[in-house]
Image 1: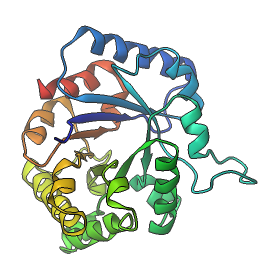
Image 2: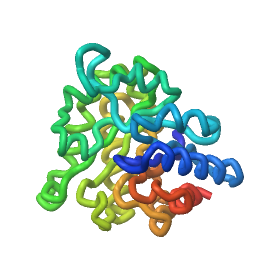
Image 3: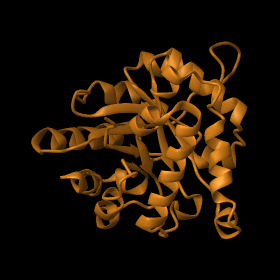
Image 4: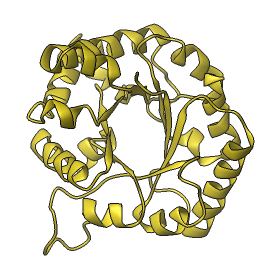
Amino acid sequence: MRKNIVAGNWKMNTTVPEGVALAKEVNQQLANAKHNCDVVICVPFTHLTSVAAVIDQKVLGLGAENCSEYESGAYTGEVSADMVASTGAGYVILGHSERRQYFKENNEQLLAKCRLALKNNLTPIFCVGEVLEERENGTYNEVVKHQIEALFDLTAEDFAKIIVAYEPVWAIGTGKTATADQAQDMHANIRAVIAEKYGKEIADNTSILYGGSCKPTNAKELFSKPDVDGGLIGGAALKADSFMGIVEAFN
């Protein structure tokens, strides 16, 4: 049975003290409230150890926003999957559209990152999604299929450990949101692509999150769709109340 998951992606926001305060607040609200989904916060590398020290990971999971495609060595400024795991984190976001766009990450690099994350017992939250031009010219299903296929060198056992996040790039930080029906159509398409490669059981058990201007006001409608298993939340994850408003959409 696949899990419902709400994951926050803080991006390049908050100082360490601000991040610790936010993590504590989210953890406290979760501990005091009934919630029907797994909740994760993915924070900047600088915050991981400090945040791990102040949250209860039985209540609130912790992840990084990226990791290196290299295991170790002379890669100044890079952070390996092994280093991420050593902080106590259990998740890592890979292939976020901002990494693909600004840092030109490609399928080969993302497969390498995924392999190293899995080797270090990190759960990848693997992002896929189309830009506005691809949405408008009708190629969006093929684009997303190609992105998912980057991981098809993984064994079925390894692929089954991955969370997928669909982010329509045109709806990130723009205030635009895919309609609940658009989100459902793409999530169903992603599940069909996975089923074709790995079989129905693995596809049915893969959590597919929606990322793209998800807010407390639209989360319930999005999450009501049969193939939408939660959200990867950007801006709304930077305030405990708005983040919890999205978590509560599963209640």
